[in-house]
Amino acid sequence: PIGGMRFYTSADPGFAALLEDELDEGVFELNLSTQVGFRLLGADLGASLQLNGNTLDTAGQTALIGTYDGTGDGIHNHPTWTLFIPEGDTSIYNITFELYQANGSTYATSDPYTISLSTAVPEPASLAGLALASAGLLRRRRR
Image (cartoon, rainbow, N blue to C red; front, side):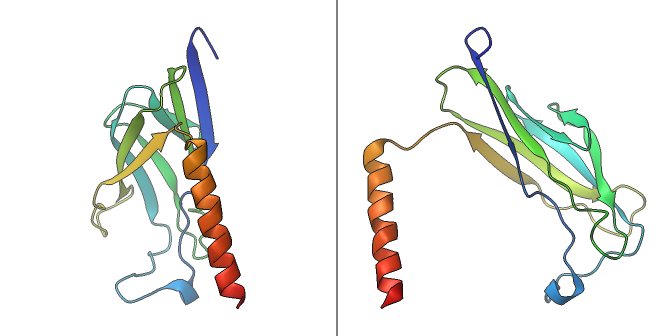
């Protein structure tokens, strides 16, 4: 807590190129040396992300995710999503972004994606119900 504010952060498995055996109909391997960029379209006040050392919290900001090297290692990236919000706030905060080719125009820009972040914790009754349902599914699966 900092002056009545709370700071939450979490790393995400994030972005990774599909391997050749993971490709499916409608999904194509990127050309070698294709740079994939991340463009922030909007972020609610208090929400931000860090990507390759860049903090993005304002529409229009960009960061390079990586360059496709044929193995997928060049694009593998773990963004960090952050909330800096009033203590006790359990609102939902949205970050909207798109992916684009940073070094050319071979590929179209993606549709917008929205990530929703919240610090809400389920109340004990909901959590207990979820635990019982999970236990029931596990028991049913073993039979």
